[in-house]
Length: 503
Ligand SMILES: [Fe+2]
Image (cartoon, rainbow, N blue to C red; front, side, top):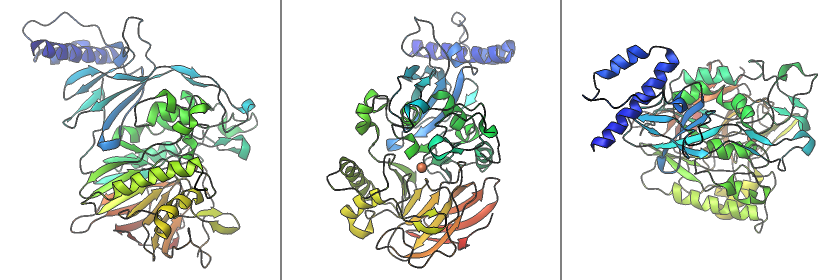
């Protein structure tokens, strides 16, 4: 007991010393710590270099299966040879007691693998950073790495920020070169800061974090100097740096997008964001393992008060219906069977299914009628549930992928469907207004009302006060202008505006 306490004291003092070293105010910190020091203090502990904030590139909390709260850190610290397996990792102080985080994955350069681009436009993915992690106990009332406090999960979050499709597009195949250095053209940094100002209890990112796949051509001014490819430098520029205010504000629920499939940014997904333990077979480093790396079992995150979110990985879903003997059909069939089990949980009034690709939403097509929802996923879902598509118990579906905002209420018995893929990447054209007669996202569905816009922005979900159940969804512009307010109860959603909303 005593030695445990002393160890905790030493770790705490080490963290304090690291803080003091950083801020050049050692005597004050030592004095403030002295009041609680044992009568005979242990020998002075040198500053813990692994905890120094200069080494910490990103720190956040994400929520995994069973509401596990996972603290993650990306660090550039290189430990001495005798520092042990977790020597790169900082001390995490929970409720005043510091302990060293566990190494998730060490620095490495992944050899060049098959990517979505031609070999000449690809390169090995360099990760000159360690990723460390620790599970936060449910009893945690404070958590910090050095001076940086980590946000803690709430059992019954009241406000959730939703965003998706946030990166800056550099893609040779489409000759698409977004101006990453122009905050109007690629607004993620200001959008994330604005969203953080809403003080969410939780953030839900519905996929496509990484878009800088190819090198900016020399004649395009707006993206000069941008990192590209699938290594750390690009992840830092596309997500961790601009989204830092939102990562600091609340724990995240992370959904995987098609940009994080193995042949694209899957290596970074596995290292940084996947909630499961790091595993070489699903690291996306070796294309021979892509069948394992491109799929994941769904899991539920309880929101308390009768609400839950079911997180579904559709990263590899294609655009066409699947044959029942296709391995991908079988993989998604298994995933949707798990969704049915999760959605059947007793006591739920609002089960929110979330995956990247819209299933009962639209994809606008310039100059033509809108395209329907994802045909690959629909083919699996209709095989399981006929034209209900979703299993019983799913009231709401939240997606990204299409770069606009859509809120759809069905006259048929289908979940209220919301698309929120307008978080920073190049926007899609607006859907036609009104929708051409007979437009449906899938056979057997009937649209009652659709509300949509095609401006940059995000969603704020507020839990509705009892006796109402469900959530109020507010669509905001990137600058925080309220675009629409939609009240959801069960599988219905009623917005204060219908049709296209001008910015
Ligand atoms: Fe996408």
